[in-house]
Image 1 (spheres, one colour):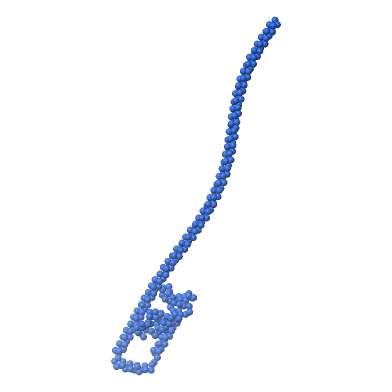
Image 2 (cartoon, one colour):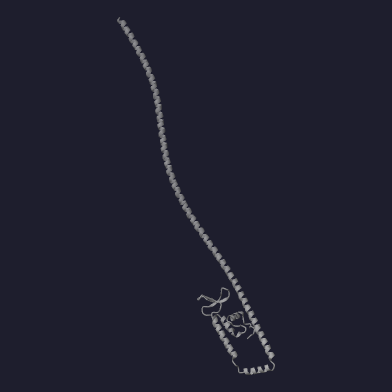
Amino acid sequence: HDAPPSPELDDRTIETAIALDIDPFAEDHLLWIARSAQNDAELPPGWHRCTLADLSEGYANPALGVERPDHPRAEEFRVLVAQERRRTAARAHRPHPEQPRKRARTTGIASGGGGGDENATSRVGKTLHADARVAAMEASHRIALKGLQRKVAELERRAIEREEAWENERMEAEARTHRVVVEAEERMRSGLEDERRAMRDTIRQAVERERKVAAEEATRAVKTSLRSVKAAEAEDARRRELEAVKMDASRFAAREEALSKMLASARDELSEKNRTIASLRRELAQVKGAAIG
């Protein structure tokens, strides 16, 4: 069985075989188990293939909330591998009817000087086994490289998805921010409009109160002014009346003085007349006396 891998032995089969403890090059008769494990039909109900957090291939059961890197039936496949190995070992040690004669011929050939052929066969077997091991190592390296490539591709894909998700989140955040700004502006505009209306109402009420107060003060001032005007007019009338009385008194005093002068003159004239009368009476008396005498 130490033969190089056949062209049909792909890296995925080699990787599955190694996971099931199968030597894909020395135990190619057990590769059918690895291929069976690759069949999704062999998965238990509810299980499916997935990519794990480390970007390696694994299996998941969403109902159970379980993720695992190995096959859910890996232990069953390993038991089957052990059974096939025991069966193969039993067939290899089972005696064959022609085996004694072959041993006899082999013994005869060995006794006739066939030691060099046995050494050559051993060396060829060891060389083939070493080649198989090298091929296995190369296959493992290819598997590891492909795994890394898959991880890199998955990382790139996730990075692109994350960038797209970030871009979508950024756009959504910008949209939310725009909506919040618009709503805030609308609320602020509405609040400012309410405040403006309230301020207009307050100003209107204040103006009305001031207008009423001013009207009342103006009314009081007008009334006071009217009273003042009336008082001034009354005072002026009294002053004019007083001046008229003073003028009348002056005219009366002047007339009184004139009358006093006229009376004095009349008295003087009367006195003169009285003196004249007295003189005439004396003269008359003298005349009478003379006439009588």
